[in-house]
Length: 264
Ligand SMILES: O=C(O)CCC(=O)C(=O)O
Image 1 (tube, rainbow, N blue to C red):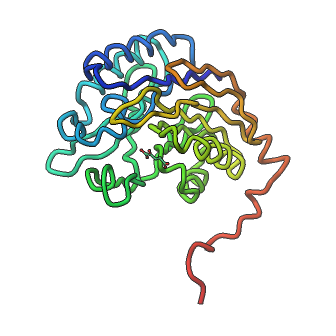
Image 2: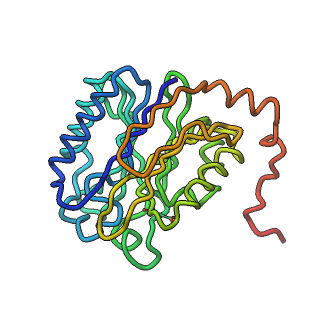
Image 3: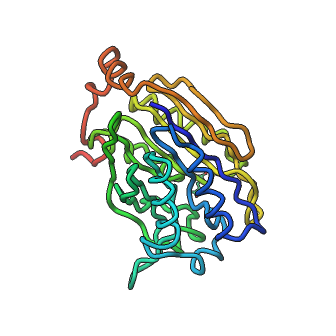
């Protein structure tokens, strides 16, 4: 299976509409890949809090339209990263969109863990409450977004729902790049799953982005890692390695369930 992670540069000064067109072109250039992945909130930037309300879109808004068309033109599965979604009558959500090669929406995931503690995304957006998996021809994808990477129980839930490959779009800041790499590898090792984690490059809202998108195999080996700038990170991997690893080293079978609930 071939995946291309498009580490988009999100810099101030590029209008959202231009970036949308540019990114659609980057997706079209990936014809021949099985799966293309974009980062979190690449239209505005994950830290451009003051842009969220103005750039929020309905689910089937301009980014949806452009990405559906690009997926179908390229004939690829497309995890189109996330958009600031305006739910009519409700709050904003940080919503990821996954398209099939015919350009149909295969899944939408509203980020569960919002970043910012008592400001930023945590107060500007609502929280999702649904785990989302998507069956691709080669693997079952479990979807998570950026800060979600810090919450292992979400990934265990995705494993229980059948996930073999985690796709994690992000807008991770450079100042915590070590955590990004460490957590991506940890989620891969503990769940014996592939992790495809796609971040942004550039600087927006004064926050330099980490880049360093990363692909990790179920044994925790880094198969590919991007540099700091905009790039397409392409990797070939064998999804059967998940079943192989889980069979040879069956640690998941030794789970003791219910430890996250208090005992009497
Ligand atoms: O957890 C972190 O350090 C970064 C999270 C983040 O930037 C986000 O979720 O947008």
